[in-house]
Image (cartoon, rainbow, N blue to C red):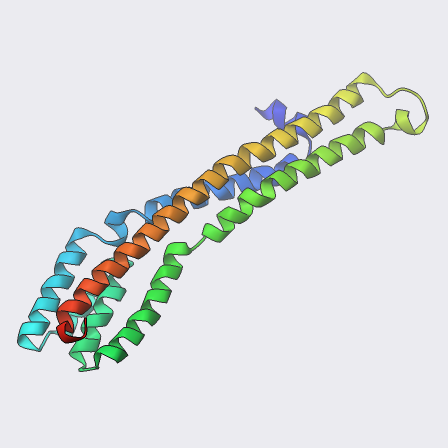
Length: 210
């Protein structure tokens, strides 16, 4: 492997850097966007239990809401409706506040996905850049400038730089693009689930406005 990196020349190092970055982003996002992390069953059960208590008793301990808000990344969206009902705000004001909290929550779900898409776009361009560097080394060698034939070693090195960088660029871009599309679908699914469960909590708290 090390010999391949040496044969590919210095243009391969930017590709290696973004490949490591892309792999780290893909692993982190895949772990973060799991349903058990965003909307664990215990969080949903607690949210609906508190919503039923608030609807029936018209009172709720603030500590219960604070504890719920810290239970998962999507919990603040569920607790927003509880807080609005607890403070006596109308359904219209509650919806406005929920929309604001939803934007912040969805931004967390989309975090780093733009960087992964950028990596998928940039990797082939960096591979093409390495290809150009390899061609320059072939045609700009000392032998070519002098008008004589280049050495076989220098010709082979230029070709290896060109081909290795092209291959590495595609090898990084294709998985990065596939990972981005898969993670984008996961993020969209988590958003839909957050919206649905929040709607159900809101419906319990404001039945006449649902």
